[in-house]
Length: 160
Image (cartoon, rainbow, N blue to C red; front, top):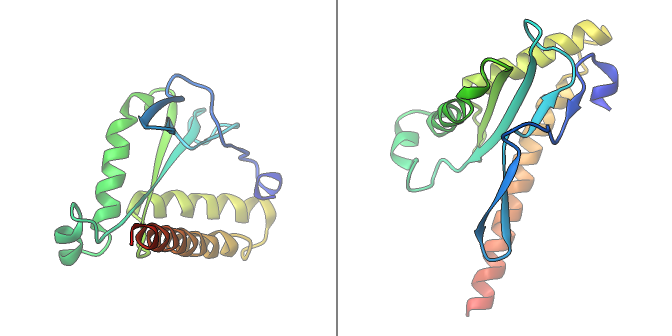
């Protein structure tokens, strides 16, 4: 519905050289490549592409950073994604969207969402429309956390 009200229409599976899959374990495939691509120019004639990362701030690899600075796990994930897609800079505007399971978003994600907010407000003349976007992100994170917890409990129960 959002794509029909603003001039930047999202595409969930962009078809360019980074869209491929690799096998990570028995029966599990991971899609490599960005998560979305605008079909119309975003900036200077280039389309925007984004990749979403959800990181757990309490994971062993992030907990020491997270104890010092809120949002540091999301910032680290954003920097990793920017480096991973650095070869897109000539053909696309890359926007990493990194969020922690405890809520904080990386600065790059906030900038990208603010730009979506501005474009939506200009296109629809409704300043409240993007409120739903900002509300859906924490809801999606809560659902993800609930799913992880449910899977953890299911695995633990089956082991005993």
